[in-house]
Amino acid sequence: MNPREKEALAVLGYFFLSHRKAEKARTLFKALVALFPEEARFAESLSYAYLMTGEYERSLAAAEDYLLLEKERKRQALGYLLKTLAYRSLGEEENACECLNAYLVSIRK
Image 1 (cartoon, rainbow, N blue to C red):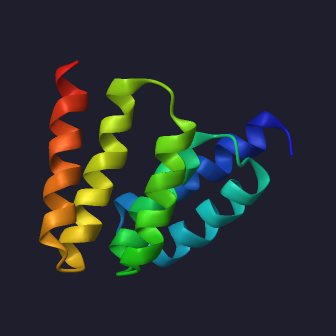
Image 2: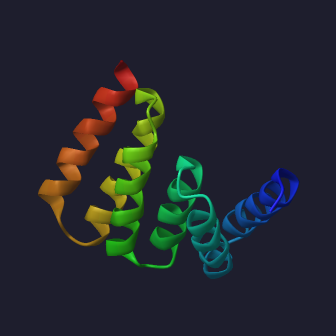
């Protein structure tokens, strides 16, 4: 797949997310993660799509992947926020608070 095709799929996935078509976005981002496992942005978008479809455990796993891939501390904040929302949705308040604290630390640095 050439770079233009990859970006076209990514844009389509973002379009689906912004128009509440999370199932379609999830399918695209699962494929993009499989094809380009080193790209943090696809793991982040997949985590968000899982969050929107109520697949909170999968959202956590994808957010964890994002945090491992993303090297820039300030950009990692998004991963912690996604984990906060997923844990909150699972009713795991203590884990949600820990992730929220990690989010706050990461945006201050």
